Length: 112
Ligand code: 5GP
Ligand code: ZN
Image (cartoon, rainbow, N blue to C red):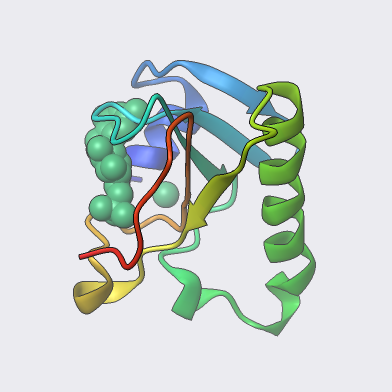
């Protein structure tokens, strides 16, 4: 498997892990855009949100639950943002489904 995030999940490529369970893995983004910038990924390789079929609905919900759980534990009580860049226009550069979790400063809207 040549996928970068699969390699991070299996430990071949190092990353700063912040959360893991049997379904999900979360780690710090290598190029943070906010004081807190994490990536939450399913352990299973799913290329993008568009590749998550019906049988992944529970897993998708779990990933959002992980975001809220991390927010509580990291003290992001003032708020945060969860983003899923999807496809070319969405700015997705790594083809393994991931939630960006950004926080620790006020975030502007809309994104570019
Ligand atoms: P995308 O552009 O696909 O939405 O997000 C990919 C994210 O992965 C980017 O924010 C980028 O900084 C991050 N990233 C790329 N390569 C690595 C890496 O080797 N390690 C970590 N921790 N993050 C990475
Ligand atoms: Zn992968």
